[in-house]
Length: 448
Image (cartoon, rainbow, N blue to C red; front, side, top):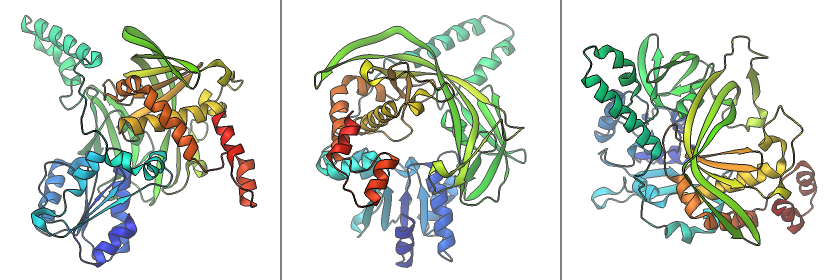
């Protein structure tokens, strides 16, 4: 995408460059600007100060910018004037991609739209082989008005409002009022630099990006998080400038299930290829703790990153939060489950077969739900895989689609495995590097 943006700049094309994450948009803008003297490029994404976003929109419309590096914030509803080229990272939802490329070519002008697939993404591999399925996606967006997580918050607010109406001293209700965020169910993180608020980030994704000592990329500048502190409406992150260019951090997160609620939960049994699976759709409550982080070069694999935690950084403090999620629970047949003897590692990490099952299931689920990487997450414990909506104290509908269309999810799992042509362990990789063909025997390992 950086190469394409540079080519378009050299051909004097005005462009929008859509990334699917804040970090990707930030890195792209910085790298493209560094590689092209005089290029005028800014960033448009959620979490930036509203005044900055309005300024960049105005500059783009007036022809004062060559490019905007953006996230879905520019897919809809904002007039940014003449655009020659739209470059977009691949989106699982075709309608979103159409919205992106529709920003170019207004008033009949000649324009170009370019989609860039990620070679490391399973959904990209799937749709590259099934492009007709991508182009013929159903253009219906399901809406579920029965969201018990949100309904519980409404019920609590009604009770507090009724009590406050009868009370002379309203100050006792201020804490509750401050805990309610009108933009979302779970609050937001206020970001401060030198005691000045410079932006916000939603919860829970902000916890992962703004943990202690995290490298945070903001408006083409690099910062380090001094501290992350809970507040009534979410949290506050305090930053300082960082000069570690091309670096990124990944939090180390310990997850556990606190409760699986049977209230309004539903169950069913599905059969596929002579196997019966038990499914449950309902609410789970999770506890998550950030115990440290990994740091490395932005384009490197995480396995090459350096580890930082309480044993290596004395000032490192754990950060914990709890949240409720709509979830599909899948009981794995017992012959696929090994009892882990390593208590220090998660059961997913310690059992390669469970790791493979979880990996394939979550990628198939993203394909069927047309969702992106942060919309669904997976957790495994004691023979059960949990695919849950990854929105803290909220509901994005993905798990409900997974539950209702689980036969399609399983069919997509098998398609992903059939399409796979990659060696999966060190021995196989060594054999392939020495000239041996990667064939059906190796695929049978994956099926197992």
